[in-house]
Image 1 (spheres, one colour):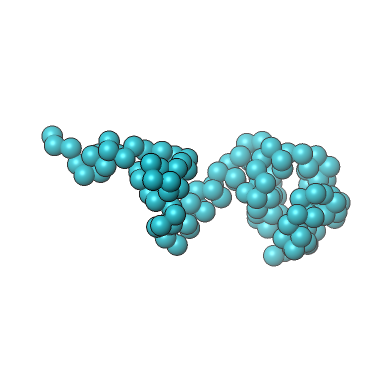
Image 2 (image 1 turned 180 degrees about the horizontal axis):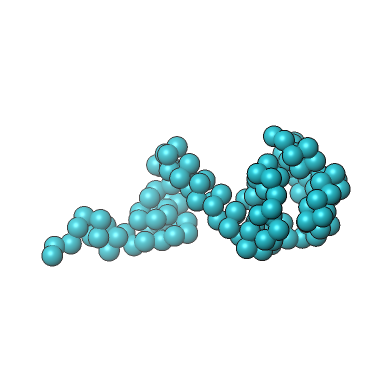
Length: 137
C-alpha cells in the first residue's frame, strides 16, 4: 500500500509533541506547525482547551476522590485551579483541601485568598473564592 501524504509528512517533518525551534529558528510543534508564522486556529485552541480541562479534571479526581461528591460549581473551581497552576502546586493547598473535604467552604475560600497564587492571579482568585463560598457562579 502506498504511503499517504500524512505519513510522508510525518516521516519528512517528524512528529514532536513539545515545542522546538526548527532549522530556520521558528517555534514549531507537531508535524512542522510553524507557530511563529501560523499560530493555531480558534477551533484548535478550543480543542486543546477541552483536552486540558479533561486532563485537569482527571488529575484532580484521581488525587482527591472526595471532589466527586462536590456540586458542579465547586468542583469546577478546583478544576480551574488545577488547570491554572498544575496539580503539584495545587496539592500544596492542604488547608483549603481539608476545608473542602469537610464542606467548610467559607474556610476554603479564605485559604484560597490567603496564598501567593491569589496575589498572582488577583481577580481570578477573588471570583473563584466567591464561587467556592457560595456554591454559585
